[in-house]
Image 1 (cartoon, rainbow, N blue to C red):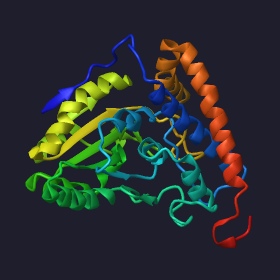
Image 2: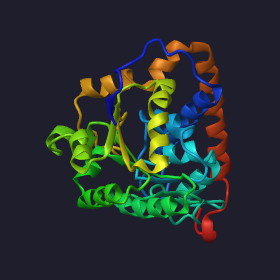
Image 3: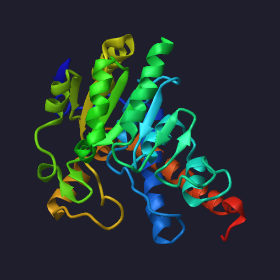
Length: 308
């Protein structure tokens, strides 16, 4: 079960309005967060998923309501693709009433229904294996989906988790968002070997995605994810993607040309060129929605009656 997706499938044939709205909702949510951080309106730090929004949006229709999703420090897009609640998420990040976790989780540590994120790299996979084993025993075909980055593959707990997942044939879907840089260190300087090689070492299925075409991604992954549900064991999917902007706020060590390439080769360019009219309308609609959400949430009292 190893495959490599084609680099791109021009032209992109179609996109559902719901998908386009969600892509741009996440994009404007993240841009607004950076503005709020600059204004000193956020509690703690925040890491955006700018450039990588299409990955959880593509997976949205492949995951079931009874699946569990485990996210990481860059997880706002993972959450919004799972639960369209930008008000609750922003309230959590700003420490305002209506926060998902009472304002104690902030940007990185969210627990909501079947969604859990953590800022500790590698922490989620052992937990996901345990939850996946429980789901397997329940026999309903649900799975555990864990998002990690290429830098997380340097954590030892990842390999203990993969070993157990394969031994026990746990319904575990591991999404590796390989953006080529771990905080400020290029992947080539921090990781030996390949993601495919790591999957092969454990006898785990592997698939590589290099396109931003949502329909293509869903067509490719649908049968593979169905196989995970049918107790054939874990699957690792590696998305070759781009991170637009720094790791957090001001620590982007990449050359200017590399940053420009990331910007120009992103999903937003592809969809804007393919569907200029619907894209422009959705862009305005979601920008205005996020602005309204930000103003409304910022006006709420702080959680626990603290200082505004």
